[in-house]
Image 1 (cartoon, helix red, strand yellow):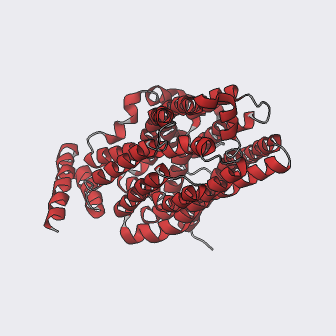
Image 2 (cartoon, rainbow, N blue to C red):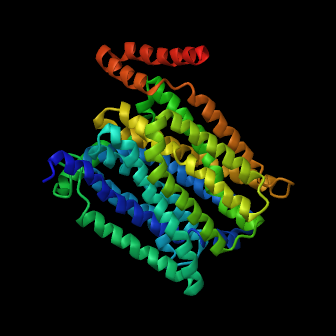
Image 3 (cartoon, rainbow, N blue to C red):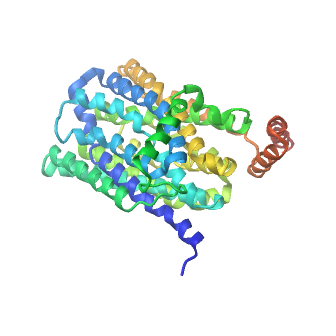
Length: 445
């Protein structure tokens, strides 16, 4: 018989199918959408994608901390149900219309619901002790990678053998399965929360809690008076600004310049999905315990910078596929950051802290895709059409340099405990001093 603690420790795996079904539904259509966008927007494709992702990012920036704090208050299950439905709505809509203008509008507005990952990580933190969270987060991201390993290639072949409509109908079916799974099977992890609460009580909590969640300054509340969290926010900002260069433009870039068809795109996306799955399912469990969260983060930032350089100078499809190998190590960044945060943030603020970091990530989505989309359009007819990826590489290297300002991990935890014991003002000085002592130690070496 398992003890109650052991059952709770393994309960986190029940949230993994939520991620899998959601992103499998989305990834099925990923190999088809770039060519549909190019066919509709032609030379304005980069700009259209940039505007779409920018609006989505701004809305996600506002809503991620809100969902994080609401999940701390009303439960993870309610919030996951809403985010899963909202984020998959654009691909489900394609089952009823092929109008890409409508798709672009709905995709932009879906940013309101882009909080599934921080909610999933908060769910995991409810179940798993601090020492085991990095591998657990890695398993969640491996599940995400698995969906992208299967989805794009399956979608491209379904479209070739049947029709694009069959792909979108399959996505719709998976979303419905996911909704039923959340309602009937996913247990709540926040104490005394769940579907058994009355609608009146739930509505009262939401109405009472929402006014503060849409204040932009509230997004940064968790970073106030904490030099470590401030430094980490800067790293997240720089890294994810560079990430959007790849995420928002690469599929259109290889379609326009390297003439990838949907099947080749499916193989590329599946390659990235497999890299994510292997990284989060295997490498995280080996590298993070061995190197620690901070050094693993540094390794990931370096690998991503190299990946961007390789993509920038790629002239063949083979070179693009080689870049996938570096993404395996780049995928160490997110679980390392999340694990660091979960170690130093109070238990009742896990959802808020992870939501705030995701808000910073979403903030970069608010301008990164548009900025890189404009850069891609600017350099499209140059001798190096991939030059904007060099800018992304520079940003990642800059984040790597800033990463060296973080104190050693044992000192982070010690400083947080001292800050709590001695008071906020004294704790601030203590945390700041560790940054200086680390610099001295590095100089001594």
